Length: 337
Image (cartoon, one colour):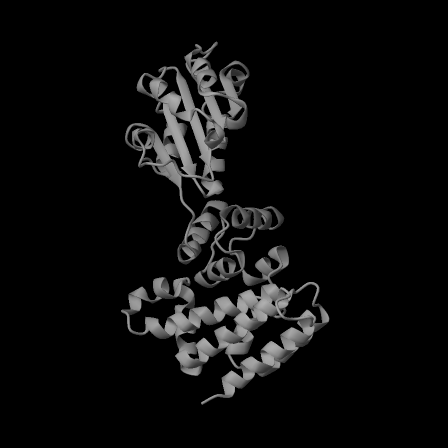
């Protein structure tokens, strides 16, 4: 099984395997590799006659084999790309070609949004005998490091805090994060450090009136900020749907709930147990003093109740009324001994 960097290096050095099988649920790396195979293996003058691109829904295994058996024209090799190969109905019939691939053909099969079943004979063969790469979804606690590395590639220095904030707001959507950072680089070509001001200016993450900061304002006990944010969300209820706010609150208090149990574990395991980036661990653990297990549990029950109400279960009230009710009940829990 090859990793992403190994395949990139192979493409750059032109030291390529005859068949590549790319699968997985993370499109970012699949798109990157398919783009490299399409544009970097052959010279521009060679592509017209030696680059073939097919789609799984429109082709059968025999047609792929016939394309691979052709000889390149005015070039040392040809490239055959098959996108969305999971849609090929008779994919297993390619095994005969895999056993004796044409040396002058580079065949790339992109098996998007799925993983080949390695329990089958065909799946085992792919994993063990071909140049096989599986693009896995990245866990959120690994995202800050990935963002910092991407920043280096784009010429940005990204500190732990800014990387953690981007993870909090953008999750583990690699393509979205890459697009946002590239947008900042285009608009601020001379900046060497990705500051909070740049993030707010070009991505629009505003900590003062952001739904994802609302739970933090509540749990930290900053009443002035809480009530300012509450007033803002009540006034802009269409732009801040209750279903999103309850989801954000639930995620926030679920982390605090898990943190209460994580105290029993070694400190190095806290981030994984809570499900947050290491930068946020200290803040979440500190909140367990104000929000011990029984309080966090009660908050989760209240939030779940209002999440059900905001989607219309046993409720006719509007989002604004539900939001005021929920915050009021959560404040009663906060006042509990």
